[in-house]
Amino acid sequence: MMNTARLAIAIVSTALIAAPFAACETSPDCTGFEDTEPAASNAMTWRFINATNVPVYLEKPGGCAALHANYRVLDSSGAPLALEGDPCGDTCEAVQERGLSSCTPDCTSQRAVMLPPGGAFEQPWDGSAWKQVDMPGGCVGPGDREGSAQSASCVQRVLPEEGTFELSLKAFTACSTNAGPCTCFGEAQPDGTCTVAPQAMNNLSLSGTELLGTASFTIPGASVVELRYEGSF
Image (cartoon, rainbow, N blue to C red; front, side, top):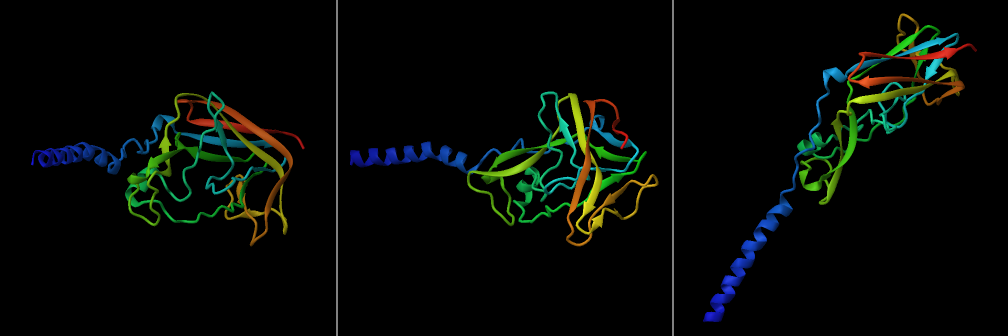
């Protein structure tokens, strides 16, 4: 009788000790994955100016980028900033609310910006960047694709630390498609600056002389950063 009582007490004690560990396994820490709102003091406009005597074409974006050109920003250590988030909108905040999306982004960007001599193009930037993080799978909300039990990959908006940065963007003096020279697509700016895009399935190719424009800026700093392309051709 005594042995039976001791066994019962041992079983209850084991259950009580195991309970907190079970709770930890089913309740991951889902805090700290919120996006940081852009700061007004970080916002600026990048202005690209063609100071040459020929039209130049800004390097087109790669992959699934929705930006107008292949901008590159390096911090003071030489590390690049990720200027775009997930093409399907899978921010960590969104993934917690509705789960991982099942979208298929269009990754066949075929456009470039043309600057005539004296032309300029402006790109607003809110001063924020993105980083890829792994979030516990238990933090993923209901959606088209459930996160794994271990982790789910998502992006988080962050603010770069204050300091000096370098903006760079290549430009080219020639643009063509396999159907002929590049032409403006849609309405041009008053100075003639426009977006060029191929018709149908024709590929767009930039060639000629490669120009690398660079400009330094600080955060916080000037509200306008100018980058100039110069030379005679």
